[in-house]
Image 1 (cartoon, rainbow, N blue to C red):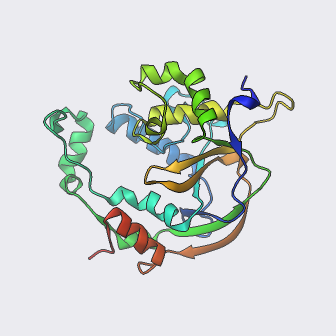
Image 2 (tube, rainbow, N blue to C red):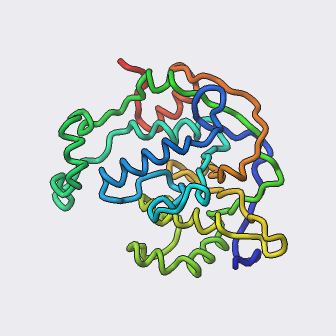
Length: 262
């Protein structure tokens, strides 16, 4: 059982948090039918590698029923951060090197790229139709919620003690900010599942509403990964995302992206 003194916790920010989503409810979690479809597609195309969100529920890999799973609602303390976290997907990827040739990709993924050759090219543009389908919301998180403060040294020590064996099995030599911000989603999702399962020893109620972490795009960008059934917030505003949005332009500038279809 997790002891309160072993891990650092924090309350939500006093101000607004932001999330990019759809329609009038951008803070809604991903529907379960979409989660199921994504699980199946990733298992087939990526040879069972975990390529979902950083703190998504790891339980889908082992067939745990939906009733015992969670969906993660990702938010950011700054509007520009919420936008940057989503549009980074349009930045061109680094091509395979001689040490990691393209032919070593799983066969299913090679077939997807063969049928869609544009995926091989750097995109470096946020499509206008992508923007048109999305909205950005602002909300105030319930101040009574408790989040794990992932970046704190106490939490890093806790993870080393309790999940060090998992890290070693995944080839992670030390648990530090690099491991928490890196590409190994299996490890970060294991962290999320671990904290999701923790109960308060006094009340036997879930101890954490989610995880506070820093963006891999910048250590000064604060993000929140909330477990859907424990998410509680008061919606402040919902806006469409226009191509001339100043925060979108700033996020695109930071990431070296263009905006729009042409």
